Amino acid sequence: MSSFNLNKGDRFSLSKAAPGLTIVKIGMGWDPNEQPGGPEFDLDVSAFSIDSDFKIPSDSYFTFYGQIRMGNKIEDKIEKGLFRPFTEDGAIIGAIDDPDGTRSDGDDDEDMFIDLSKVSDKIEQIIICCTICKYPHDNKKDRRTLDLNFGKVNDCYIRIVDESNGSEILRYDLKDQYTNEDAVEFGRLFRVGDSWEFEAMGRAHTGSLQTLVDMYT
Image 1 (spheres, rainbow, N blue to C red):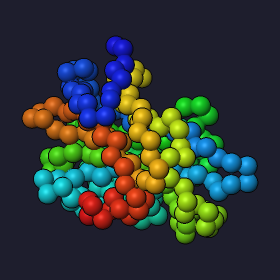
Image 2: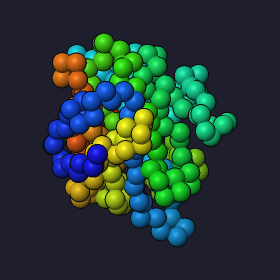
Image 3: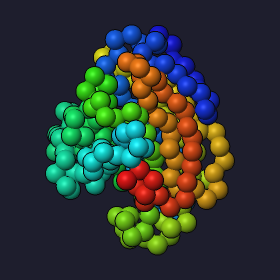
Image 4: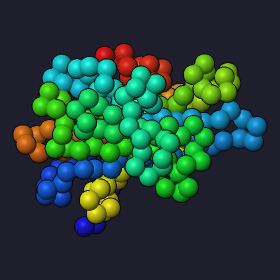
């Protein structure tokens, strides 16, 4: 099956494109315009699984690196000693935090896995986000990270892969020219009856991860 390239606002039926689809890999990538001696870019992938009230039903449904410190973690199957956050229904296994981008080796910078058959009935949509980690939360406590935004990041994309066979189902490349925003809702998976669809969102915000937390908690 060939991959479909989406534009902002496009909706795509995963169930129709890949009948029987169960586990999907969400891969995301980017290319920061880092300057020699400049602040390091630390981009993080997260997911908000929200209910009919457009809120996460419990803290577990905010899938991000901080869940590991809270004990909501599972060891990666391949990279032993590295852990991923997961939701209480076991449906979403989040990304391994990669502060300096050294793990990607030309592949997706971060990825997460979603078992659509396990998603709790109370969850209506899963919003996939990417944010820039800034001072004082960055590893090196570098105040210069406060000036980072997605206008300084190129080639941002999100793609969905059928984990059963490794085939890419769709891809969405962000094409907007951001100037101040440091948080982007890349896309969302949402239910339509008994099937799942994906929408390419590309909705950007300022305030980094905290802005999204305030929206969905």
